[in-house]
Image (cartoon, rainbow, N blue to C red):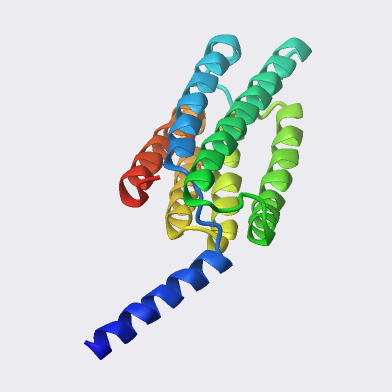
Length: 205
């Protein structure tokens, strides 16, 4: 009985240390909503931009300013909606678990996430301005995957697995250069939805 009590106490201490050193309030619903929003964004990008630029056979397509603004606008709106719903569902979870959504671990997580994301965002914008629209989807997948892997040591281990899958998908999309939007839908859409469902089932968020 005493040995079992010691084991239980050690497990409790380990859980407390894990909570204090990692941001564990990520909601599975955040991933699901992000995936759905990404698929919607990809649809609007297809009907407004990609279908007019030769989706399967271009390697350099100079966009008009109108198309460029539309594409950037779709990207910004998609990102804001995904982040907004992510914060909303995460706040709901932190209220249930009585945890603080904004603490030192959240700041560390965001810093490690944003460094690759912002670097990749600027790089993709420069590539887009040069007309290499076919590289945008692969590069966003790769930089997003790198950001997740970089931030994963401060949150749940599943985030690292998701990041590695995004990187692999981005590299494959670079080879199949004309089909980047399809890989983008898989990476930002389907993988996020699957990840969210797994998180919901595993952690009952």
